[in-house]
Image (cartoon, rainbow, N blue to C red; front, side, top):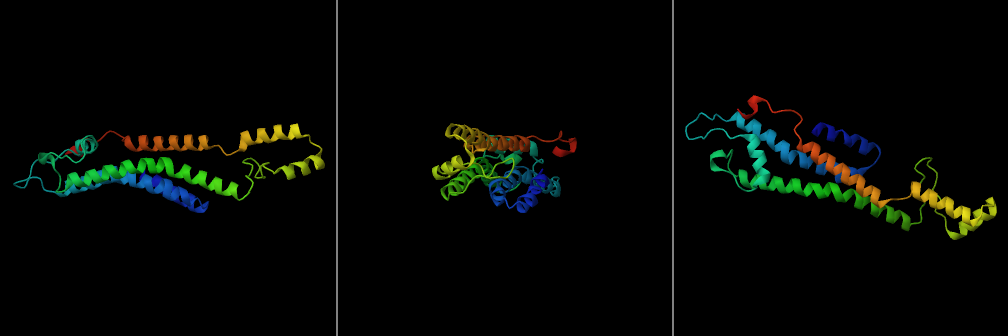
Length: 203
C-alpha cells in the first residue's frame, strides 16, 4: 500500500498538483509508517533477538502490542516490553497518526477554497469543465453588450447563467464531501489487514 501511495507522486508532479503532495501524500505516508511501518520494524527487531538468552522474557505478541498501542497509549506491560523506551515512542507515533487525519481531511479543501477566492478576487473567469471554454460570469457591462450583439433577452440570459453555474460552478460542499470520503476510505483501508496473519507471525 505504501508503494501505491508513492505512485501518486509522478502524477502530481506531471500535472503540477503540488498541493496534493503536501496535503495528501505526506500525511498518508506518515500515517502508514507510524503504524504499519513501525510494525515491520518491530518484526525485524523481534526476529533479530535471541530470546533464549538468560534474563529475557518470552517474546511479546506484536499484534497485541499494536492493538494496545492505541487502546492504552503510554502503557506497556514490563513482561511484554520489546525494547527500552517503547511506551514513549508508541505514544509519539499514535499522536502523529492522529494528527495526520485532520491534515488529510482539512488542508486540501482549505487550499482549494483559498485559491478559488484569490482567483475570483482577481476577476478571472472559471473554465467550463466540459469544453474548457470560459464559464459565463460576466459583468453587467458585458451582459449588456451580449444582449445587443446576440439579441438574447435578459431573462433568458439569467436562466442560462443560473443553469451553467449550477452545473459547472464552484461547489464548496462537494469539495469537502469528496475529501471526507477520500480520507475515510484511506483510513479504513489502511487499518484493515489485507490477509490473515500467518501462524509464524507471532512466533
